[in-house]
Length: 179
Image (cartoon, rainbow, N blue to C red; front, side, top):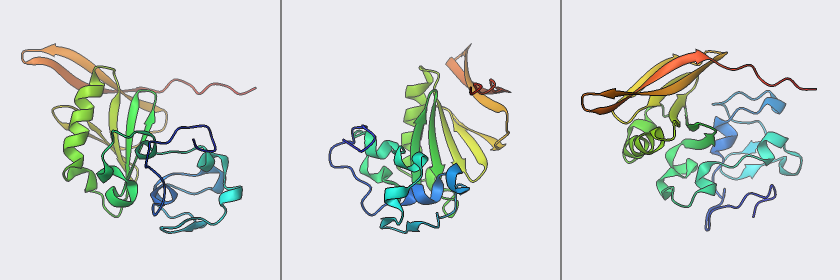
């Protein structure tokens, strides 16, 4: 059990991996995604671990939490961090290896996830820098740069060969107001 109460998958740890320190955005530190955190000792860990920001202390990639995710997905090996939000599987790719997600076995895994999660209306989204591509069961749909205030929605329609999936870009619902 981690400090935040999340159960880590048996045998999984961050040891030797600091890819989240590069790929993830850390608002509290004004650190953009895709750049190394100034507090990271690359391949070793956080130099301010005891005082790290809250967003860092509660973050766990899917590799750490899901034992069914293959060892090849360990971020230090794949150069990608997999996260999950409501309705979305996110694959954040190291901008120094922008095609990593297109290589095997990763692309085949993404296609399987897209087919499996489509039934739950869950999108598989690959982000390289500010560019987003949605992986559908039958094709990859490049969306281009992230558009503030917009969201991608998976839609399904009957077709002559079965269900046809597509993406619609919609206005994102307004963020909840804080008291």
